[in-house]
Image 1 (tube, helix red, strand yellow):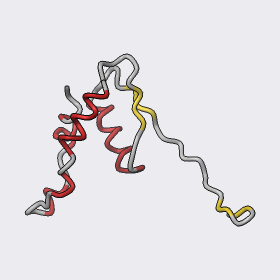
Image 2 (cartoon, helix red, strand yellow; image 1 turned 180 degrees about the horizontal axis):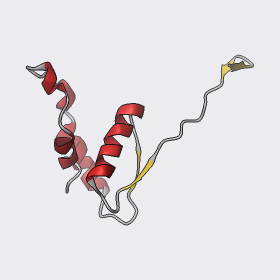
Image 3 (cartoon, one colour; image 1 turned 90 degrees about the horizontal axis):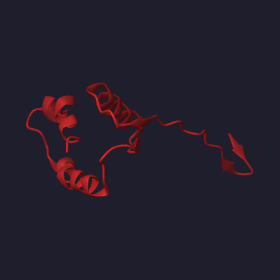
Image 4 (cartoon, one colour; image 1 turned 30 degrees about the horizontal axis):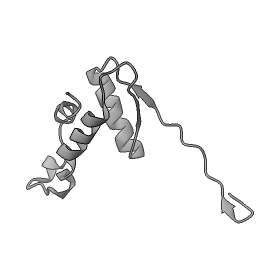
Length: 88
């Protein structure tokens, strides 16, 4: 749909994740949202989650996209391994 030459865009409703009580289910839901939308919103109120932790996590995963697996099945890490990235 266009209006005066501009394309109308539907509002995207992203899930907001409360990580004050992290569980494996919350982690799985976060991974699913990241896979579906390419990003997600995390509510960190009530947690010890700091900017320094975020910076450290980005440093840890910054080179992962450059890794080419030997076996195509290795292309996807198990959820448990990804959840370890969220542990302090």
